[in-house]
Image 1 (tube, rainbow, N blue to C red):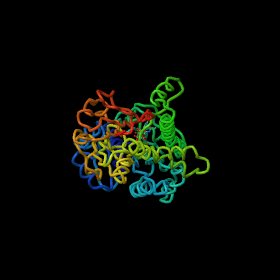
Image 2 (image 1 turned 45 degrees about the vertical axis):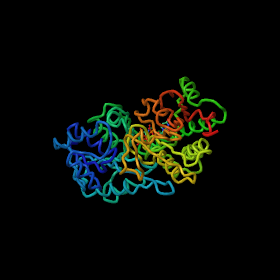
Image 3 (image 1 turned 180 degrees about the vertical axis):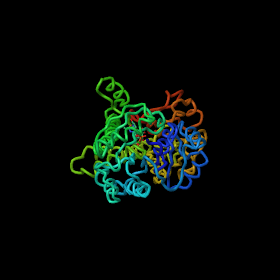
Image 4 (image 1 turned 90 degrees about the vertical axis):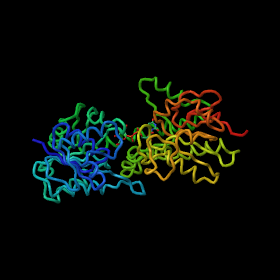
Length: 428
Ligand code: SAJ
């Protein structure tokens, strides 16, 4: 029987997994090093913005199924869901994963399952995690502890749906470990379960995100090419994607978040000489904030102290997460530019305690602005009345780096990222 679960790391992944397991009738104990997270959770509230998560958590906390604290407890199953950030040289920092596994050692009993959900570089389970358990005296190959890697694959914004419905890959240290760990996820999972080896699970997770990174780089390169060739990249993508085996992604101001711009480096660091495509994709996507800046410079080259209204600061639409956000990168490139741009930011989700920037109401940021710059495709922008640009701005010119605004009204000119060849120069 697997009745008691201990989850180490109560962030964007650990908290939802704790919630759904508790909802399925398990006794879940969550552990985090951040006292604020624990204090809030004990009171039934959370610090993360994710649709449906707050209600789920407050329900299972008040029913007593989910408890939280700073230390692990004995359990049948231990789930590690801590971050794997990168060092300055982009190599993976797996110390949180190692510390989390060490922290559960005093509470482990024979027959327990240890599951790592954190995204890790290939071979981490074999070369780093299993040895920690073995040094503590457990014969992992003989299944004294069932060790597996179950990479999280849920997308922020739809976590509560995807956590139940996605296909789950279980990478067992042994075949038996994979089968044992599958029983845990069957408690709540509606999606399919595929059992494989630990390294295959590690690599497949990393390649999913790398595929997306490379594909977005292709779309970003297409946007740059289209500006030279006088063709609309969005129309090109729409038509190319009519083909049954083509799925080009969308260009944008860069790739943000804590996963897609990070995970390719986990592969690259292990295979530097044979990964030029992945490395180039990273370079292209990292170059996009500079590309956005160059378009603003072109537009405003005749204007002194231009006012720029920036729409969106988070790393993608309808989330409050600013980690790795290319929008923030663009804003600081503008703020620190010698051209002395007056930057007025708006974001319906992000608050001033998250970023060292003033955030203004939408109308105020647009008031007498020379250019509006859309960096995030929040729903609010997708359905906005575009007559506001003409009503409020000095010149109703909009750079839509997400191609998300409705059609322009009146004298307003909206330039989407994939159609910049005709970009005007203000004041000419
Ligand atoms: N983006 C584009 N163009 C696109 C799609 C995305 O510029 O066509 C940008 C977004 O605006 C954002 C970045 O890419 O800045 C990443 O956003 P995302 O929505 O592609 O992905 P994440 O980071 O929110 O979540 C990804 C997901 N992986 C895949 O879809 C393969 C998710 O399923 C993973 O669980 C998550 O990474 C993770 O934790 O690894």
